[in-house]
Length: 399
Ligand SMILES: [Zn+2]
Image 1 (spheres, protein in one colour):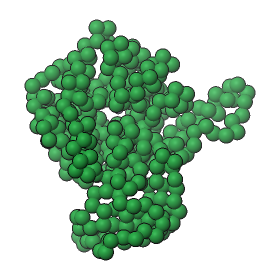
Image 2: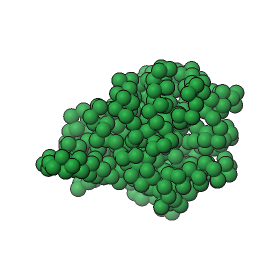
Image 3: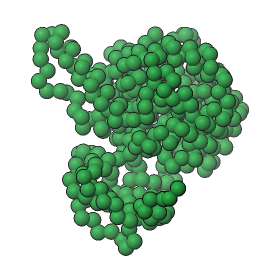
Image 4: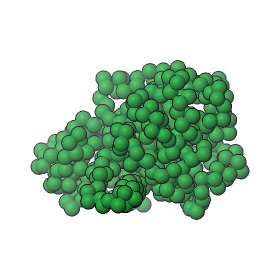
């Protein structure tokens, strides 16, 4: 295979400038710059604007006629399932649970997790999704977890391993010495990296009022890492889980509530008041049946939103389809509600610009990475040495 002329020029450290693009900066004011350039120097964006002067030896890329936007961010993707990409195109959530949780999930070996994660990571980068949370809930042993880390590290993108295990209760697997040793080995004491973060992933079904999940939340608190949880999933997770989390003090900023499609106003208030955010998988919610995609409710409560694809077993890795589906679902609901009152919607509340924000800045904020990713602004990219220490302290367990 012959490298393209551009690829051959992209030696590490050599600056690159994209010329004459329509640049969606996604800065706080959402500035759109027609005919603008973006200069990348080292690991960071050095400048954005028209007619940039660039250092000698900079690689020039003519982006005339193109749109340049920030890499998109997916805050919830079960990457291991990409091994079964497209297999469940007509599934409901019930069929998905039966196949993955009851029948075949246990059969996944570490090498199967590796294969799924590797394909998923490449699929994400190919779709312009440069940061992905791997909601990895089939890590039956730490060998499985190591396989996931190996796959994520082998692809040049930014990932967050959200560690979970559907085959065991969260208060069981999170309490094992093997789990702690794994976290120490890969994410503690300088072992973490700016390109690989860590979260803990489990759900709180209303099965037990004595809240055994408390122990797993305490592990997350002890490690200083966020929890991500499927909340408000029809007949699976309910307001009861939110209430238990809140009353025990575990609803804190940085918590990501996936779907949140069938919650009461009271639960939305608790999420809004405690600084959490919702990861919306619109195509998943529409097709699998977790509940109606809730942006029309989240907007009312001022809850921050990020987008996600959930799983390639049904859908693609393409956040453009997530943006379109989210816009459609919100507007369909708005029209439906208005018609039931014999009214006509003359101006949409949810704007296209807002869903682009959710696919970029929304994810960056949800992950606490807004200073590094999510917009095309000078200084974004990898942190410099001083910021890197501070940043890693935040992202890393124990920091
Ligand atoms: Zn999910």
